Length: 111
Length: 115
Image 1 (cartoon, rainbow over the protein chains, first blue to last red):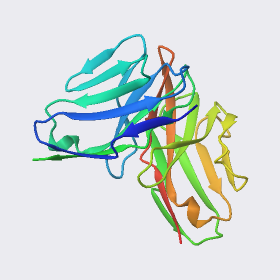
Image 2 (spheres, rainbow over the protein chains, first blue to last red):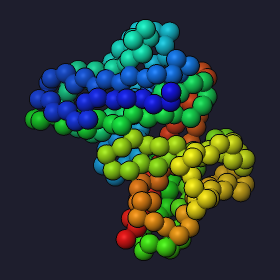
Image 3 (spheres, rainbow over the protein chains, first blue to last red):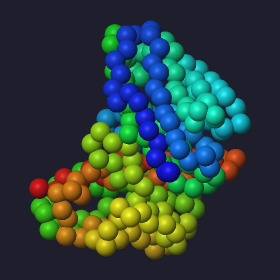
């Protein structure tokens, strides 16, 4: 009930391409869905987040798409750059509670 | 600088030894979290503090693990009688409530290797 499942485990994209990472959840009480970005040797850093009352949120090249009925949400990175190469984690929580993270996706953007 | 300082950054120890990690928030935050991250996995919740009170502990936190936040500022995580399975990155995070959402800011972590 608390799990968040993330796919793919790894992703290789050419520079300028679109990177898409998907997450699915079971707990319908979740009401906050952030994405974190982690570089080697660093802690995860908040990238973008969405609430279930909207279906899409865009910040620069990063977009979250949210499908409440399917209990799925995804991260789209437009015009992917080599500097985007990192591990991405989706997460979910209920109001004010601890975050539950997905397993992570290692993104490599080739120049 | 994330506003969360963790020390040490790396610790190598032999099985059976005790280790202690420290988390120092640079700014005031009511909630402080500890997560554990193993290679290739997402962070897993261990415990959290609201000021100095430890309000929730994961089942992952065996009796060999103890965490404290004595004055509601810095926190320590101690692992007694370490086992090889304890090898992981231990992450401290501060929580900021933004419109009811729990926004976490993580430190760079303390990497533990148990030989």
